Image (cartoon, rainbow, N blue to C red; front, side):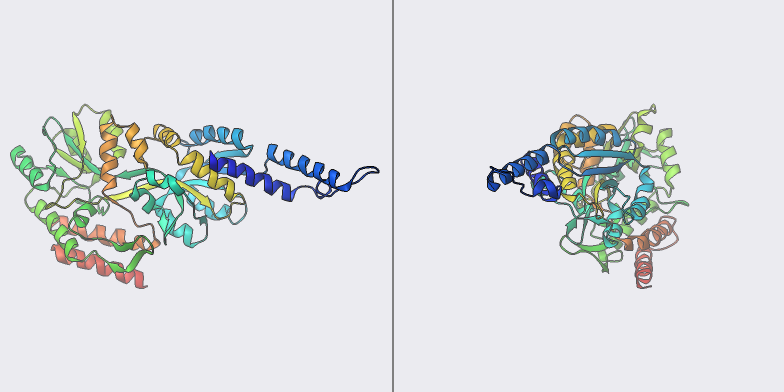
Length: 425
């Protein structure tokens, strides 16, 4: 509320300074001191400005979240007098639309987007930094990191997304916490396909396999919170990454993890023959509609090391082309970065929370708790354009590893070499 009062005061000063010239000039009539008339005119201008602040906001949001933004916009207008318009846009089209409309002066002040847009949009001057202040303490670090580029935050997070491990509760009484326990459970079940992880067969998928690489210490690019990603420091072929690739080879050779693509891993789990399936919360609806007795657990530790899956983050960006940044910043902090709004956004589009206080409100939802905590262990998918060189190289070489076509060290060394070559072009 203090920030809102400050905003209203700022708007008052802006309007008073930019008002009609005739109203701001002292006028005198016979018998009236000029000082008295000037004071009255100033008071009239100030009163008018406080009652009718200028400026408006345009927000682009996907269809699921737009109603929430519309509701809080009405409260914002009531408190500040600032009109807010919410336009529904297809999520997949927002990034390109902003890049075209912003420079033309036709784009939004605020827009919903994904964290991996950040590097490109910031480098191109399309988005502006945001200041969360004390509100940042309630957000998960991984969510803030996702929208941070070269030491600056460019959006207010509203949701996170990461993989975890579904299990068939009729086959597994207690989900394994370690890879050793998982191996033991699979040996006792004597099933042909025990751990379903996409990224084998004919479907390269680095996203679902990166946790094997990160747990022992592998990484994509070195990261520093102040300076960001160092694309000259690639960790796909370091000792930890090769150790993680060796785990993949061992699980495959021992028959614990079959070389399955996404659809095969999914179908085997839905059929009830595969006890474990690693994927994300987007499949919760499918499982809820099924007849399976299922649960979800965090990814098992590997030799005592906690896996760090990739995390996707969604949030609200501030356009660099906005002419109302003071108003927009207040809307972001006072009306979006709140437990109430973020809980409403979760209910409108059930993705994992980006704030601890929202997760606390969902304490009885074991599925949300598990996926959110799995993400809290993770790292954001690098939000820089250089990541485009990684997906194919890493996915293809891990696919070859899972299909028994290459040794672990060769797979990771080739992947790293291909990334370096692509970035050097």
